Amino acid sequence: MKNRTLVFLLLCLVTVTNVPYVYDISGQQTLNYVILFDESHGQVFNRTFMDTALSSLTNITIEDSDTKLVIELIFQIETRFNSTNLQGVDLLIFTNPGLGEDDSLDQAEKDAILDYVELGGSLFLLCNPLTQQDNITGHPTTMNELLIERDNWLTSARFMFGANQSLSRVIVDDFNSTYGNATHVTFNEYNSTKIIFNENIDFFWQETKIDNVTIYSDSISLGNERLEDNSLEKIVQVGKTPITSYAINEEYDIFRDPTNGFLTWLFAKKTKGTRLVLSGSTIMFSDLEIVENSTWIEQNQNLELWNNLILWLLEYTPHLERDPPAIWVFENYALLVFALSAVIFGISILVFKYRNKRKITVTIK
Image (tube, rainbow, N blue to C red; front, side, top):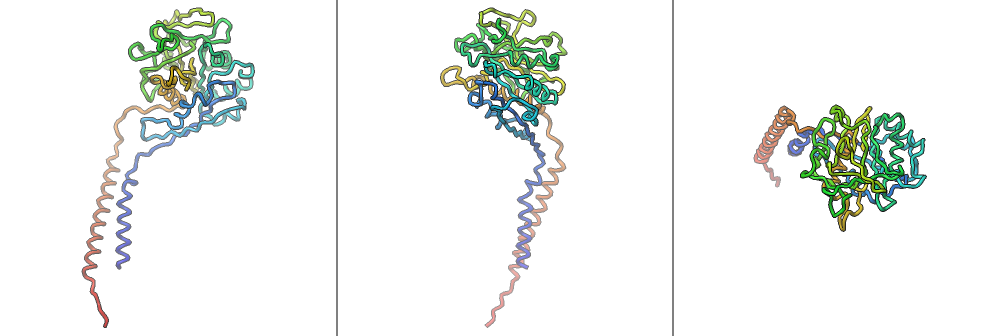
């Protein structure tokens, strides 16, 4: 009888201690994504210079405690794009390619990328502006040739180039610059009105509100997507510069956008089931130094913007702030289980003590 009582006590104890598991009704969902980062086209901005940005993806945090993101990051080093290595990829990141002839996309690669996009894959293209360092100077021709394929179905936006049609321009602002360099343009809450993506709009939900970023960027031509028609805001979003900004090419020719009054450095679009982002700057998301002991990715909210763009491209939409679900039934159930277990546990202890008191000790001489 003693053994039965002990077993019963243990069962009661297990029931009580497992109440939290019964009560765990969070229903956390896990979202799995695969991101391919290309290094096979002469990119200077490889995983070394993009380490902070790329490392953040495998440990990206979101506010929704009911959702867990698992991101697998893979690298393409030598193999060219084809339907096989793009299979199962949710997002392709193609940064500023090299300037060599072998660094361009051949026709087979263009077809593979566009087939991948037409099937619902997301594409993140990052150029870079004109610079005195030839190896990181933007080479927009490669990306523009990709975008112009198949009758511009993807977008009419283009990275802008200079007189020789191979080197990108650079955005300059004499009033909103930082570190004494007019090409290092800083946007903050004091000089930006709808310059950065809005936090909560139907098209572009962001996990983190972005108020401050620092860019060093090529400008992007919107083509037919100039946002003259407000309805277009439902399918495209742009990062705008102040009207004091202008673009220059290698000949130092000045360009201002006479239609919009601003320049575009970031462009996002949803079309035909896919998502596309064009960034005129790769360096702003890199670990290259902007000043001594400080890197571009560390400037203001550059890293947060990177994470927002990645999440949007992965079609992850942060949840609206909402009332907690009606779970009172489960709460009552959990409390009931706990109460019954406590009662049974208490009765068992009393029974056990009572039986011990009634034990008769028999001595045999």
